[in-house]
View 1 (spheres, rainbow, N blue to C red):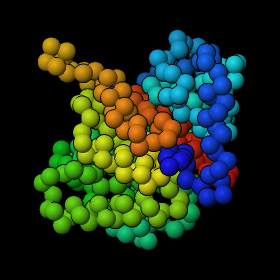
View 2 (cartoon, rainbow, N blue to C red; view 1 turned 180 degrees about the horizontal axis):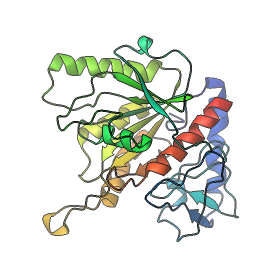
View 3 (cartoon, helix red, strand yellow; view 1 turned 45 degrees about the vertical axis):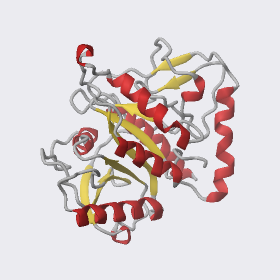
Length: 299
């Protein structure tokens, strides 16, 4: 399988993108700069993305995600903070200026037909999906948050800046939902993944405050086996478990999860660590979406 985490393109393009990893493997010790952001957003629609020097992250070259048309040279690379993603020249217009709910659908064919690119958020119930969506757009109630898991039951489209979509999908793994309803959610969600031509990438949310769950591993492997472009979004990275109670740090759970799914992917999927409490990862997600979206629009 190939291109499991790059944006979805026509088959004629697929053979061209495999070369993007070659420049990365050609160098063993590149100089790496890291994006550092204050708690509030520093994104603009026209200004260059600020890059500040920092110590190299503990990532080997083969674990980095290189977006399309992003060569890596001895002059250095730019990595999004708290991720394995290299920044490309396509990372522009990342700021969210407007966000509006458009519609809810239970069938893929009922989704908006305007052809705008979209990013789907999906994850286990109670993983913090609605909270993350609200954090991305900086509106507390754009996506309904609830202490009761399984609240999202449709494909919900939110139009951003009138030119792309965030899509909130039903959470999976909610044991209290009726079996028939869970099967309906699974059916129309997977149908959406397989048949939605404007889907640029799926953002799979995984709780980094706990060890890897079997259901999350199965979901990631299904996306990989079906060649659905995927980015891993590790949530709740602000939560720290006490070592004396046998808990692991979020960074350790992130590493464990990636090691467990490695066999389903030819190259490493992109990933970002986040927290809806501290807004860690917000700017990084928007920049990653921007570079994938802008490349998708160009091609």
